[in-house]
Image 1 (cartoon, rainbow, N blue to C red):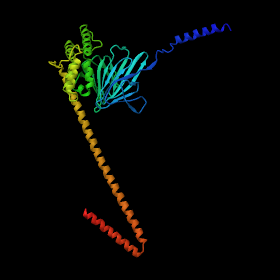
Image 2 (cartoon, rainbow, N blue to C red):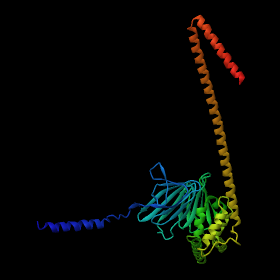
Image 3 (cartoon, rainbow, N blue to C red):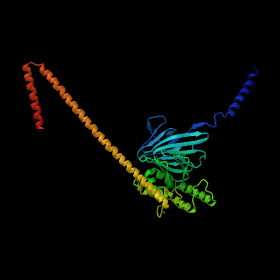
Image 4 (cartoon, helix red, strand yellow):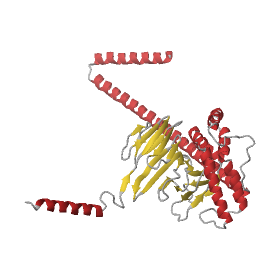
Length: 408
């Protein structure tokens, strides 16, 4: 009996050693679920939980997980924050977004979103682990963030997906294409889901403003100092690369192109705000008031007076003209398709009404025929005198009916 205690102690030590050697509770390939939180809601926003088929109204503080779907109605928006990495997403009106992947895998944070329609401003934490993954997928492209501030928009009518980069570097990969397209600050990537080849160039500010709302304008304005500083650092790194005759990891360009980018990025936010001031979908008075309220907290306040023009090459002007022409052609084709559908629907409705009237007329005739046959059978069953009285009643009823119709 005295040997029992030492044996138990030896067994406990042996078990502890096994657990430590096996990495108990800390498997290298462990996968853990992560969460996001809705931080702000404007208007009507719906959330459909993963595996469910019933959407519920979203509210501030609501937790989201992998597989959840967020949709916004007209004049609505939502702000999402990834809980651990503090990445922020601002979703505009008429958006449809799915959190397709939100896990911790092998020690790396995996964040993947699928945007079916609408516009999303992504503010990715610049201090995140370089091995972490942050992707936004659209019907026509996969977007991986190597920088911080960028906007993704999917036109629900044309299916065109557009990426606008404010800071950092963003990669875009088309389906079945091994190469990545790198988009830099002040640039855009336009991709039609029906066309595997996209178009890279400068931001088209009118197109950008047409797909964002006041909430995103406010976010951009409040981030102006951060955007300016990050772009200044980016340009300095590019200049060092150019001076050292090394372009690894950056877009190859000459000094003239770098200077053009430097001037443009210095006033990137101002050009966005200027375009917003002249847009039909945004209130100029509300933006002017926002500028007055935010300018006091900015190191470099917004000043639209004597704003230099955005410098574009002739090649870039031609690219934007071509994109605009293609967009108008798609819109015209969709308008024609919609009119054809309406015409076909009208013809179908007319045919249905004709058939309904025909069926009603046939039913009326059938009822009258059944009534006539019933009266005939009843008449034949009567004696001659009663039959004469019945005939007189029928004639009188017919005269009365005819008189009433003539009176009308």
